[in-house]
Amino acid sequence: MIDLYYWTTPNGHKISIMLEEAKLAYRVKPVNIGRGEQFAPEFLTIAPNNRIPAIVDHSPQDGGQPMALFESGAILEYLADKTGQFLPAEGRERYVVLQWLHWQVGGLGPMAGQNHHFCHYAPQKI
Ligand SMILES: N[C@@H](CCC(=O)N[C@@H](CS)C(=O)NCC(=O)O)C(=O)O
Image 1 (cartoon, rainbow, N blue to C red):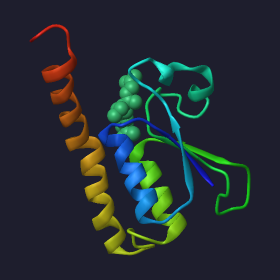
Image 2 (image 1 turned 180 degrees about the vertical axis):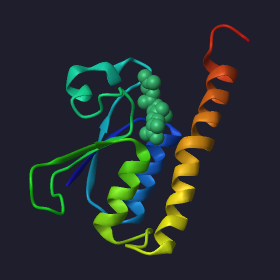
Image 3 (image 1 turned 90 degrees about the vertical axis):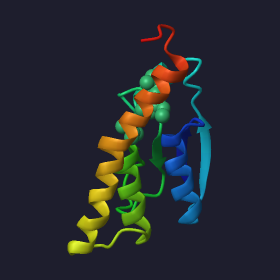
Image 4 (image 1 turned 30 degrees about the vertical axis):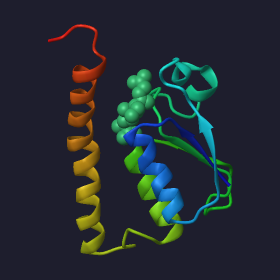
């Protein structure tokens, strides 16, 4: 079972879509970032950067302690490796997929986020 620390944002959706597509069992743990729940001490032990999404995998591949992960790209890569889906295990095809993952997480995602923040949320119109 995987706990998904989630709120209804594009970064949250990236992981819920992956969990659905990979047919993994999960339960949603809502973190209302509008109310500041991302700063709760219990959540910070899982995601020290106070951002969703994050997961805790209670049945990790290595059979060890529950695996906590934050950052959507790392979570997607972990779930792809766990299930053997959507990411080749090795070879150049793996890097072709990863380049697009890193492009989204490091390029498109932050720019789209800033656009949304300054167009819709920022109290000061600049
Ligand atoms: N680089 C992070 C970005 C995560 C992120 O920005 N999450 C936002 C919601 S989409 C958040 O939790 N914001 C809360 C805050 O900044 O306090 C990822 O890809 O997971």
